[in-house]
Length: 449
Image (cartoon, rainbow, N blue to C red; front, side, top):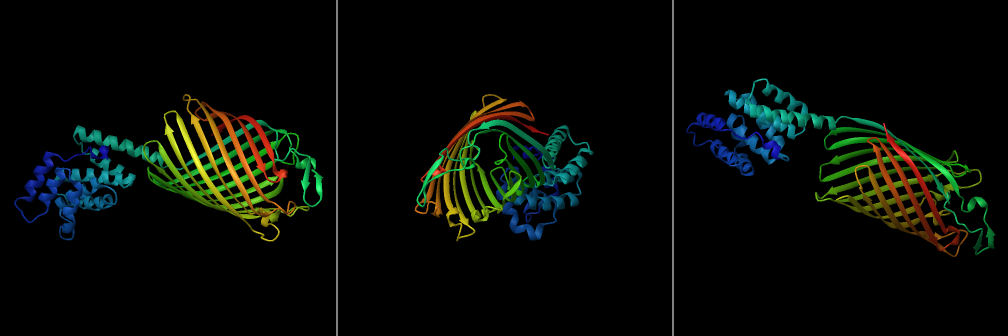
């Protein structure tokens, strides 16, 4: 609020108010004036409140009550607008009228009525105010311009593409023979075993943000991801996702509520569709600490094929995440915990696809300089399915997944970033069919239009 107190009460105004009031001992204005001059604004508002019904419309009362309410801020700022509008309209003295206009313009600014604030500040400038007042007004006009620019809708496109190598594109076991309780050992089809390939992965994203005010906005995002494996097409993936999100809050607390639709094709054939509702809360503590909480509900549906009834895998998912972030000098640390429950849509033939999972993820970024940021991510996840597997009917599947990623961001230009990363994943299951390791590395770029 320091910059909002640049326009302080002047001795000239105090003299005008005293002369206008004369010796009226019944008026609450002298006490209001004394409290405002002493910068005891909260007490001034409390003093004025019992007199509002009788004294609203009196120029001096409205002015001092409005000024005190403005300095208190919060919900009182709206009261300040009403009071100062009356004072500016009824003031017969030119000095008081100009001062009421100045404070009213500031009240418009505080309540985010930027157009009205700009217009009124310019009206005062046209009357050739003193140099110090002009300087303060010009400072406010610069703030208004900055805030107006930040509230204009934004639209941008981003393209990101990488080339890499993955020694297990289908996250499958390397074992060719698997023991089953019913028929003993079976030989896996090569498509069901670990498959190595080189790949390209390209993402095209459109983002649109429409701000209603400084603290409320609506954003729409559409992204398309194409994963192309060079030697085999069977595991090529096309992913199209659209989301709409409403965000609100202030510099301390931010909230987001949204919905998303996703469709996935595998080798050009419909594979999976999902719809999700989500909400999140982020709080800033002002010393580099942030925490976040989020929840999401998703319906995930699979497409049947001529040979496979994938719809038995349909689930409804509930996911909760909580995390902390700490910015400490060049380091940014993030720690997140999550837990989820997936309930099968088909409880008869697909009950084994229901599962619960929870995990822990940690990341650290180190800003080496303005252009280079190496990073590390590590995570662990535990998964337990709801019922026995239809093939391994004497076992309820349980998996433990650990992964680690090392990478580098190189900000080559303002809108161009070069990226590189290496990742290793190890999945251990009590059913050997689902044991696997995966190692991949990739490098590419991200460009924003």
